[in-house]
Length: 351
Ligand code: MRU
Image: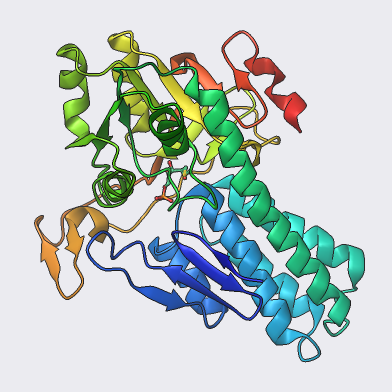
């Protein structure tokens, strides 16, 4: 069995990932040889996007079971899963997917036992299920979201939510793809470059180019002016964790985009799978926000050198995500259902 997407290439024996830090100008595939390599790849954002880090972690755990069967104990596997679970704190999909694998482990073996063949098969099956489910979730999100977009719309999006960030066609970008490619509507996409790590400029622009969907790249701070000029009709973004009241975390800059949309009376949609809903989290105030290294704001690491534009000791605050309050959201486009302000209180029923 082989799984190959835009960003992962998996067999039960090994996982290769496309190093997203090198895109769009270099396509480098890296083999995830051991646990440390994989965790570093998640932390560095070589592999990223809430759904994808959950799916890839499940597949990588299947690789570890394969390598460790008969040699290492179940406790080692659980410890590895727990370490992976903590690699990034905001995207709840990571925890949701790893917990599914941990449940399979606890159903089949005790922690002091050596890993047996049956566990290898069960963990591998569950990882493949998680992958296949995510592909389907993306399709359902796209179908549910497409009705909100009309021929002639110009749509702004933030960060990268496409095939690079999921197992399938993506969430917000999957909706955009469906509207343009399946329904054939003529749309235009404004891509926020998404400071500081430029997932919009580097990854979304790259994906839209491959898809031949017309787009214009803008810096994050331009959105309000474009809205004022009447250049934007709708906004759609992805999410890393949705709280039960509809507040949601997404890439830093999403909140300001939502505020700008609200001020200009532009519909603001968020798209995500049910695996991004945190059923234990009552509101956005409880979502843990990842803080990242100051060097991401001081300058940029290019393939062979580093460019520093700020004084090297400049004090930096670098929250990687922000929380958009539910009141700014027009609709939550999920795989099973679309919610609006009238029924978002039913989000908990998706559990
Ligand atoms: O730090 P990143 O690049 O992993 O952040 C990604 C986002 O914020 C995406 O919008 C979100 O994970 C949804 S991806 C379908």
